[in-house]
Length: 156
Image (tube, rainbow, N blue to C red; front, side, top):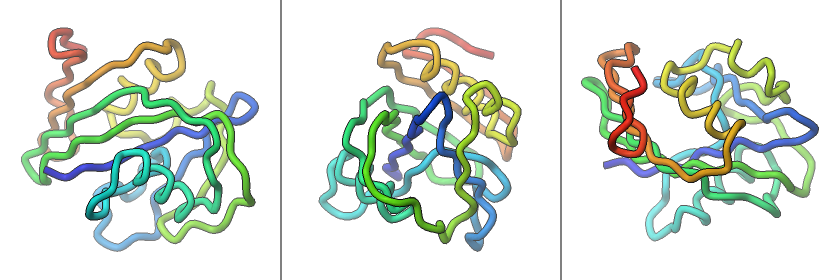
């Protein structure tokens, strides 16, 4: 199983979003996502989070919160367990990302972006609640066929 982190960095009512347009063979190609990536050997979730944010943005997180775990199941990709964070403070200057274009997007407009269908289910939880949650999202190709919150609540 693949382990990853994803972080939604917040500033002035906006999230820093990454429009995935530059990476070859990218399963996220054309999508808007938060900042994150795959664990390296011997990393904790927090070490992966901090490294990925710094590599992709040039920013160093100084205040972040573990918000949930999302399990992605697919008929085309390896199962992925994603550790989900939000961050409210950072230092540093933003750099150009080699995976796509970084843009600050108003939280009110995030849902209008080209997002994965499952992201449209967990993003409101990040915006509207402080509660920790788990979610299982199952895809057939790009089609979301199952979404279960906290092991019991079917969201489809």
